[in-house]
Length: 222
Image 1 (cartoon, rainbow, N blue to C red):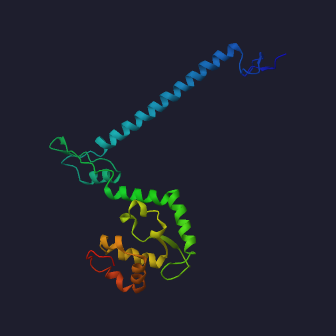
Image 2: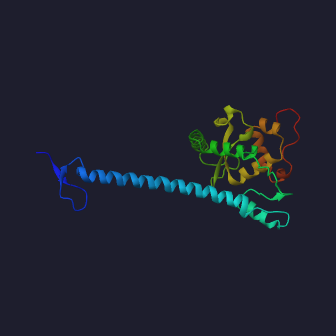
Image 3: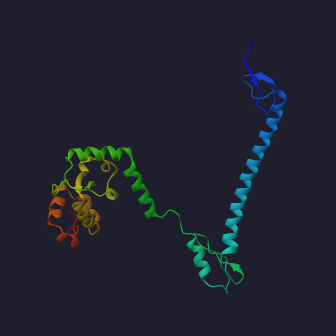
């Protein structure tokens, strides 16, 4: 005898096969109720979407819209909320030029962040840390935060240098900061050709060299 259970409708005593939830009569009612619920969900989502669109249009074109008689503060408020300034000039809307979303600097920052989050970099960083025994390659310190640093700065590296352990060494926070300040005041051609020995000599003479950087580039390796 097949296994059965009572209909899932409240108060119904009909017995139905186990694989079904309702009897034939109440299945139709439940199905219609389900369809209505889905229609309400869809209409509610559409309503919310159009409501957001209407609110955005109101903010852009009515709430923060100005004219020649209004105070400039309205435009400033609109900008503070990240909205377009729709102030009118001589009865016509002034064309507001949008700033490009992706500037060269922001693209470089995202590419840099993506590189430092990559699995390849994390693996190489750990290998360099172990190779240098967790101590600074310049002063020998093993206290505090340590940095796996590119000898040739990352922005100047060739593709094959980015993950090359020969172009990486471990620095303490103090030596890393000194190196960064020297890099900011040094010609790129010098930085591309600087060796480990060059950097060790310069960093050991810091802080006097922090204001000087390397000597002017003459086309030769240091």
